[in-house]
Length: 193
Ligand SMILES: C[S@@+](CC[C@H](N)C(=O)[O-])C[C@H]1O[C@@H](n2cnc3c(N)ncnc32)[C@H](O)[C@@H]1O
Image (tube, rainbow, N blue to C red):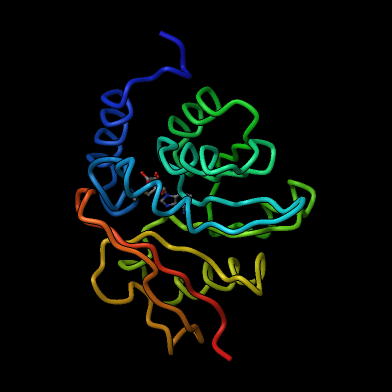
């Protein structure tokens, strides 16, 4: 079986295995559904030579939805901390820049990639359970990468997964779907005025 035709079950198996190993890092027991992934991808913005940056790509379901929504593979940079998943992403997303690394080191990741102009940053890393100082660090890195647009965040929270006042953010939920387990929302945050 070729890496590009990996069935959903194998994605789910890899995901579940990692959830057993580190549930907080994974944040979910299965990858986002096709419907949720599409909902996210349809809200991603980029123009010209900007790169879309996806943090916490998992098995690449959102990455694939971004490609289907028209992001050219060479304009997509994905970061995933789990080496086995990064290998899977490399094998199944030809042309996409896959970095096996820590989303918290985004400035270094972008520097190593030649400091591209960045469109949207899409954060799939579960932020809600993180200590506030860790949230502050990753929020600052995402805003530095895309100061005008801010960033998209996928979350299962009903209320804002990030405390907006604490992080100097404005924004809110753009979309929500029950066609995911658990039901999920797409949030956009930008610096407060
Ligand atoms: C909720 S899953 C989302 C996966 C995928 N985007 C999806 O929607 O199915 C979170 C992903 O973030 C990754 N992750 C967690 N912490 C990370 C970090 N600090 N840097 C990069 N990736 C991280 C996990 O390994 C996992 O693949």
